[in-house]
Image (tube, rainbow over all chains, first blue to last red):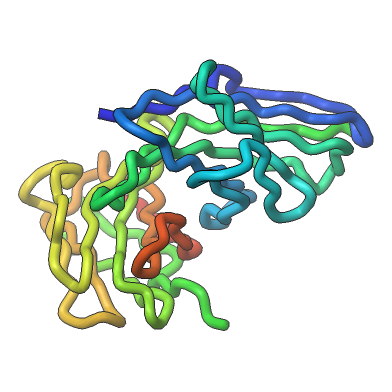
Length: 114
Length: 113
């Protein structure tokens, strides 16, 4: 069975500073990895995915994530944080193939301070 | 383009009543997922359908919960009878053939008193 760990419940960063939201995973075979963002009273919104290829993937709103197979990590990053980036962020994994289910982490609340 | 549509957005009901949540996936998507989100348990997959067929319902908490997908554009999640511990936000999501990313609806906030 696959699992995702988001070790930080809360991340605070000053506006304009770089941000990192951490994610590690466990899955049999090659992982398919995803990041989602959830704003208050809204559904989850897809940000980016890693399936194969370049370890650095770029997504919406200036976010990117780096796949590191040896460390089984898929950390979300942004060079310069905005106050509007404040939200709940979820990492998810699936083993792919015929499996369609995503396993989500517990979420990390990002607060960008003005 | 219309995203995933869920109704109602809010539902308040009394314990013992039947509750029906509705979902319309994105047109052309062939997989549909029902999730439940609570503070205590986070985001849980309840059931998912592929081409209208239930594939994995292992997340359905008990027999009080049932889900149907009579056609490619409509699904329901029913709770009968409802209990206070069913209070949560229920999300529906869909994905297209060959892709794994899912697109979520706005959710239904269910409160059972």
